Image (cartoon, rainbow, N blue to C red):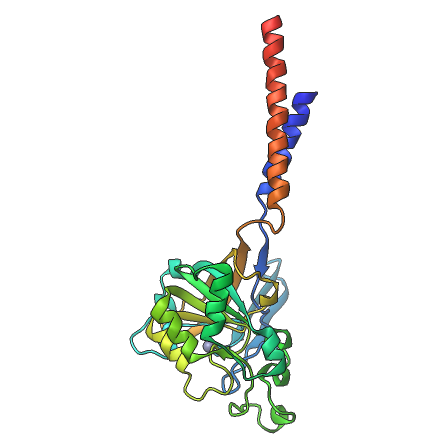
Length: 295
Ligand SMILES: [Zn+2]
């Protein structure tokens, strides 16, 4: 009986130590919901075939979609703003995976839409959480991601802009990574990629996209229009950027997930259940040895 109980304990421990929390950082691609850069082609999904096919004697679905490279949750290849640097299909797959870190500027962004992630934000983060690791994916959490799907709110356009000029790029107001912060990162740390919950790694009022230029020149890619960034901790997870492998691409859609290094708040429970399993196992073994010796 006691052996059975020990077996159950060990089993529970094994089952509990496997699942890890996964966060999907991708916005669904859908007509009327997916956001493209204002001057770019909209995402468009068209039903091709959807129904019972007599010839096949089977249900059959097959459709078409088209979009600009920089639509929805997508990766900017380094070549987007830097001649001779990696296009999307050139990025080595091991450079699309890395430890994620989140820098939260959402409180500032509530007050001021043109705020940017600064060098001080980076150094303050490091004081609390340690040096930004090699191969990191540095993610800005601005909170603007909650407006995705509503162009006026997401782009920070003045009222009426969407109706008057839906391709407007002069009156964009959303946060980004400052060019000084980008320069500090490439000069002092070794990261693989960046990510933002806005439409661009440069802030909306940028005219020259210098942050894109600095990261691109250093073969650092950028994820734009990320979803669920507010559900991520400052560190302790790995980013998997499953980017479209377009040979000539300056960018393209990405399925992006974060996998936590461990189940949140479960480490203490896990170690205590593991310890109790070991104790019960030892008691069982003692009983078995005793009965063998006595027989
Ligand atoms: Zn882009």
